[in-house]
Image (cartoon, rainbow, N blue to C red; front, top):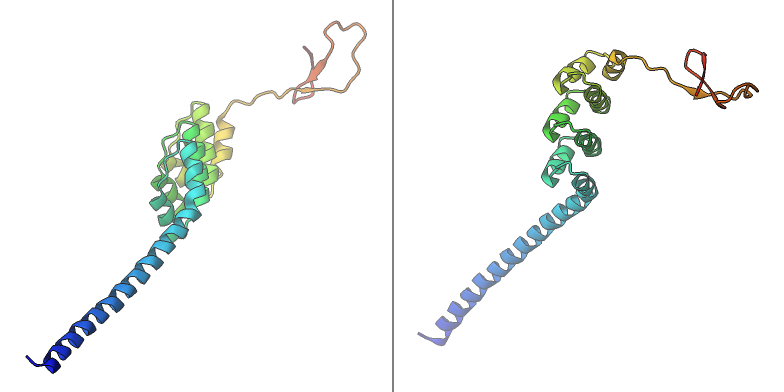
Length: 179
């Protein structure tokens, strides 16, 4: 083999290595950009995830990213999930998000479910969602089922001189009662 043959072979190898370097550099740049985008999204949802984590309301970062991609407000879903878990309701992120995407006022429905559970009223998410989609105020309906309570407030009246008890209270109907 002559010197020229060896040089052409060497230049061919160097050209192949050069193409590999360009390809490898481009691949590294693309991977870096994808990693940067993923990291920015992770940081964006980290606060919500931590809030749910410390409230023991399991929400995964990929679920938060999915909500963002589906144009659902993750903060609304996470806040209501936290309220539900702390009230002892077993509502999943998927259930809350699907109801929200259907047009349900999820905050009002979750509050209605909490009030219903605390007062022994049997109400499911599906039933409450159907009522909300029908245009009914679910929270008001649940509150109307609860027995009315007499709310007592202190009056600013002077104490009767013969009264040994001291303060008088007035209930919601205006009747005065001594305590």
